[in-house]
Length: 235
Ligand code: OAD
Image (cartoon, rainbow, N blue to C red; front, side):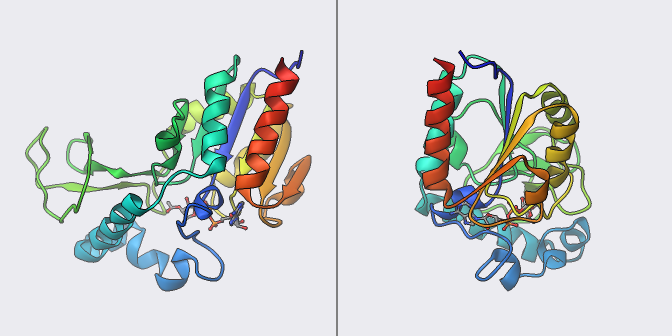
């Protein structure tokens, strides 16, 4: 019987790469074709809402053409079978974790299939385009915006994430470059709290040195292998 009970898993764009969603950094990445400051900041939304809304409309529409891969499915299997505490924290705004069946999930950078009212803070499930000035069904203000955490805004659920990390026995990071804080700092918080730390990534990342172990390779192979091994150790 394994003594591991409390798990925190952090995922990034790399877990969705094999589903056909572009990552952010590196060749072919989303930030190669777009300047972050033009589409992913509160200032950009203020300056050119049509551009920002269109950028996220296109990405929301693209969700219809992709499906979860073996890595998302493996984490859903872990979620269904893991008897202890588990929190899967994703930086991704796609919905592939939930479509794979994962329930213990937190979208720290927001979600494409959600609209946020800038006036009253209500969230609405959203499909299709979200033109600037769309009215909020809760308060009536023409203030719905993409429910995305822009650079300079506070990620969602930080208290819950930090509490789970502080209790974690094992912290696993999958498919993230370790370039964006506070997500990139969670490995150090987990280590400081006594957790074992494991990175599963295609290549070494900015955070690799902070992990006890780094396994390099595609998520769709590494994640099912890791999930199988941790579930069989638990039996
Ligand atoms: P990045 O694009 O920065 O990094 C993706 C990581 O995944 C890289 O280290 C790749 O080597 C790795 N990778 C690529 N393909 C992979 C595969 N098949 N299997 C495993 N790993 C693979 O994406 P994130 O780290 O998620 O924020 O970026 C963090 C945040 O920066 C995003 O949430 C986004 C962005 O700006 C917002 O939009 C608010």
